[in-house]
Image (cartoon, rainbow, N blue to C red; front, side, top):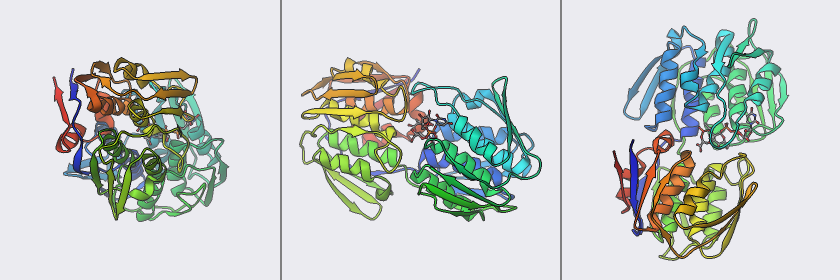
Length: 418
Ligand SMILES: CC(=O)N[C@H]1[C@@H](OP(=O)(O)OP(=O)(O)OC[C@H]2O[C@@H](n3ccc(=O)[nH]c3=O)[C@H](O)[C@@H]2O)O[C@H](CO)[C@@H](O)[C@@H]1O
Ligand SMILES: C=C(OP(=O)(O)O)C(=O)O
């Protein structure tokens, strides 16, 4: 099995080109099912999750073509409405074909995604939202089976809690429903805005994406379009934290600074100078050690849970004590035990981790448990004394495009070994 080997000590400097966002491209690829013509998506990152989604779409009968950073999906040949367990179990976002298949064809069968390392991750909010639009849904033998006679019907629906995936699934379904849908307590993540922009380019009528209230006037048909995926704010944040931890100076190019307010504020609090120039974000740490920061994860625009592990890594070597509250996922501290192996000082009490910065981490073999945990271990390895070998990096390949090549170009000593 492949591993990543990091040798700590290099101060990162230079420019890194940010890829398209994993969490935007996955729902957008699912949304292509709603169209009556080919949809061309560009700025598509080369990620394992993108390949899984391509397989899922091809398995439904869609034509899928990959060329450079572009992917064209032709949904006209779709002849199956079943998303099988084998694909859904490897990637939860597969559940996002449910809304589009149901709205377009009147029926869908999607395997229940189940839990993952970071928590149980139910899909009840997706189901309730689609039921509000008139779908009949049963859960049987591990599959969500949904159907509707004729078209879904627009309705007002208030999500019980903020869910990115549920907002996306219901938004996509409502685009082809009859009448007007109003979604309240909707998620406001930038990836929802990007999905809505793609749907609008396909002919959907959507207002309010990026706020708590989204209004969708259903249309009968959606056409093809060209859409470029928004920059990955989590990849951007990960590289900026790497620069901060190593005392370096790094410019993230092709980024979207407006999607990163909470993260940039915390990096400034840690002592970084941040300069924004269009789609370029430069972080300069001037060779200093970061100051510890407190963070509480919460839905956008608050601090993203997908950056929690990386900030924990930073707090491990920061000056002072940082308190981290994880409010989104029940079990998203899996990286703690691995960071302890590198010499970190972390105490966990329920959803809170208290991290006391140490002057130096020391390299050791560690095991990645999930995507962002993998990133946090690489970051810790970058500042640890000696070598850190990270096992189970398939998690990393789900969501980071060429991370070792990008870090190497910034001066890190990092390589993949078999
Ligand atoms: C592919 C993708 O975009 N993944 C992101 C998405 O995941 P995802 O869309 O799965 O996350 P949600 O926003 O739905 O989850 C938020 C919380 O709601 C709970 N919940 C969710 C749905 C549901 O039906 N019932 C329920 O109880 C979840 O268990 C979790 O505790 O948003 C998360 C929160 O920003 C990010 O960490 C993930 O990277
Ligand atoms: C948790 C994440 O992704 P997913 O929802 O695809 O598991 C993530 O991107 O950090």
